[in-house]
Image (cartoon, rainbow, N blue to C red; front, side, top):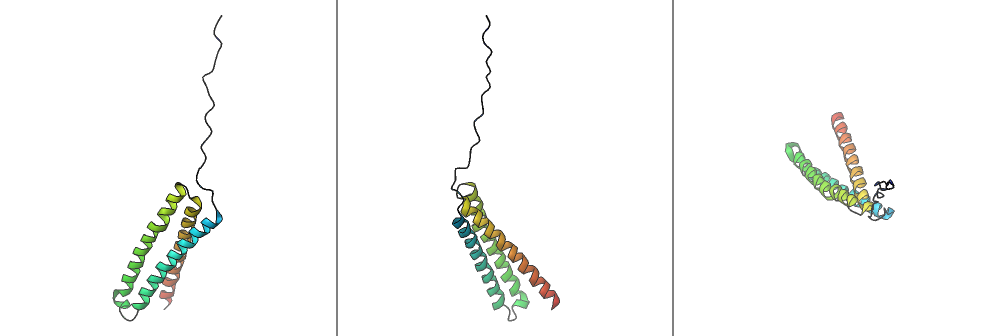
Length: 125
């Protein structure tokens, strides 16, 4: 008699699911608001620098220095909002991480719109 035919095939394990915190609305809103407040502070700082340099130094390069400092602070805001938001999204606190990313993206979109409107207004003068 021959031995019974057996299959060595087994059912694969089910896929792993995310074990982080669930996305809570208030944490998402807190992340968005924190990012937007950061953008408002950086933009307000840049506008204040440009306004203080508008008395003649602006025409001699003071405005460039103010905009350059504002760009440096925006890069710092990327490092303080977008990077931690991505890390939080990947490693557990998805609500706050998504909120930081959404707020940062909204702030960047508004700044691009303001820059465009400023350039258009400067061309018409």
